[in-house]
Length: 210
Image 1 (cartoon, rainbow, N blue to C red):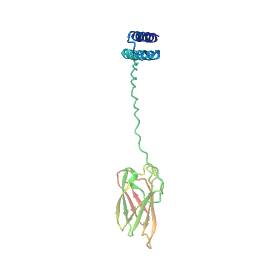
Image 2 (image 1 turned 180 degrees about the vertical axis):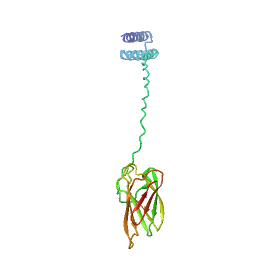
Image 3 (image 1 turned 180 degrees about the horizontal axis):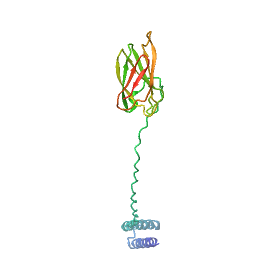
Image 4 (image 1 turned 30 degrees about the vertical axis):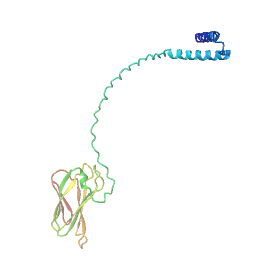
């Protein structure tokens, strides 16, 4: 509203000045038409208004007040989980899954071996064989065999019987010959560090305990 009032006053003053100048001037000077006087006054008023607007200082925007961010509490310190002492498990021997009609895996005995002497007391070649027909606690079964010449001996490390099946004992005298026959010995549960002796005779296999 104030700007419009100012503009009207400027136009009125401009028009009044133009009339006075026309009245005081020489008679030969042509006078401006009312339309020209109004246009000139409007142009002058517009220029003054524009200059006034430039002179007005620009309002500085007030920065918004920062809202303080709440400080989060520190996370609680967790107690370390209790460590449980688990018992050391003793490995269980793997059960035997093969056939007991083949050779025995002597190395699977866990180092528990008994020294046994295979001895031939006949005048023929012999094959002395011992074996376990069902697996022991270490999954061992099968046969251990040695071929012996006349009056020959052989030292054999035999796995413990381990509270399981004992060994059967058998020998072939003169295998493949005219005097070929089988002889047997009593079952033996070999164990311990002392030496056992298996002696093949013409009629049997003697088991000599330590």
